[in-house]
Image (cartoon, rainbow, N blue to C red; front, side, top):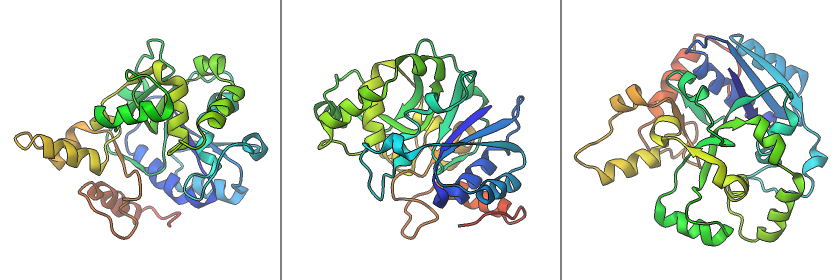
Amino acid sequence: MHLLFCINHNFCWMLVQCLRSIVRYPCTTGYTAHVLHSDLTAEDLAQMQQAVPEAEILETKVDESFFRDFPETSRYPKQIYYRIFAAQFLPDDLERILYLDTDTIVIRSLEELYRKPFQGASYIACTHVRALFNKMNCLRLGITEDVPYLNTGVMLLNLPKLRQQQTTEDVLAFISDKKNRLLLPDQDIITALYGKQIQLEDSYRYNLSDRILAMYNARHPGHIRTLDWVRQNTSIIHYCGKNKPWKPGYVGKLDIFYQELLEAEKNHGGITS
């Protein structure tokens, strides 16, 4: 199973934690983690490999000048764009890869998600946006209402199709046209340019956040999805946004899965924050 991460040096420890959560569930073909970066050292990579020997970690160093015209902020560094052009950076013979943000934790096998047929789609992903707010995104980005607004923290990429259809010029033209309207640049770009080629999957299974769970339970008081339900049905927990259990002020219930991973790591050693 080929996994994709796009990070800078500051996220090495998070990548290790994410990978450790994944390799708890053996894969029939083993795990290969492709790391797109521009600043990792040989020591960084060696430490990560030592911390997660169950996965092969392969680096691809990205020339930052490729992204010199892309907007960047402290919250959204240029690494967020690497996933957009991953098909150009990864080996040509690779046909599919599962991208994960490093603030995700895997609590069930990823095999079912990874093997899903694309059926012509460029991406398989989830949305966290309800219909009302999707209308606002349609106006902001100039897209039609049938285009779902993606959460790009978990995406299965159809690499051959992306190699055929993507151009740097298209992306830069969109950025230039919408630069004053971009809120979450990578999500805005992928949604607007490739939204009609996205196969949606269940966010409660493959991209579950505390906010999504709380909203569901508030709307369905007679059918509460408990932590036991999550354990039995969810594969990927996503601590997206600023609400993360390793930071002060966390609010939610899903931190239990992070705490369980930490307990396991105490007996493993390796990189810490």
